[in-house]
Image (cartoon, rainbow, N blue to C red; front, side):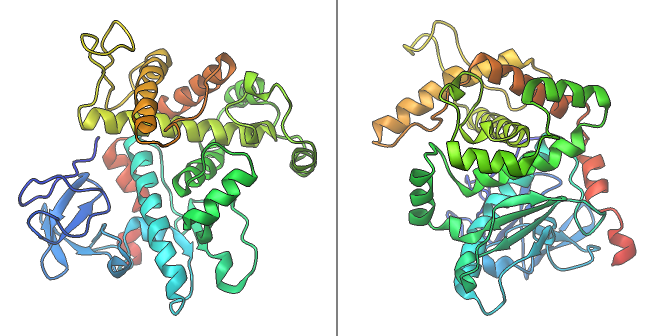
Length: 361
């Protein structure tokens, strides 16, 4: 299911974070189950006979809607935030708003892929987010994942700070959405690998994740990545430990499928009659669920070249500054297999995500 980012009143295009249509100025809210924007009046709307309310965090730019029987006035995305800055820390809350925007985009993509999203407040080890700032009290915040909880330092939403870290760490790409996609890869490694045979195949490709993470961490920050890392890995960080290789590859699968889906939705394709890139058309798909990995990666190879050329024409660096070598293609094929193995339907996802809501309401 693809998003329909259009105003329900005037049908003008709106971005996924829009609170008010820039064309007709109508107040709108995003309805996750239908992937559509709905008009709201006095903070509410009726959809298929049910009342949906504006999220209580709308003042902090959340535009998602809340089901009337939800146990709280926060939308599903906001409920997944376990920790956030104090109410009087307005500076950090401004940074939280940008990070929450990236989180909603992540959750929407996970939903479109048919992946299960079970909240931390629903079951032990469920998905949750600690979104806190190292600038609030000067304490270090380590970005990472543990037992379903993803921790993000809101200071990373500051462009100058994030860019300084990107340069210092020698990374070609560093964004809040990238952090979220990487960390959720750790979560889904445990969720999607449900059979011994899958773990065996995973270890063949990425290495044995049971190796000491502490030793790997110390080795990586002391010696760095091997000189030939680019022959087998998508990034230098992926060389640190099999866990990180899996998470980095999972993140790139989300980068690729998310960007191709956007290209498909807005009608971007390569016309062989006018392009100098290749001799046959490249038409991205809205979903690659039923397509082989070869189709996905071939489409991405050519589309990313086009995107990179557009970026360069504006004086920016490449949109996708990575090279996908054969071993990485095999790893991405594994990710594609486990993601598309048995995707949930929207109704199944919704039932799983809202399990117990009526009882707790």
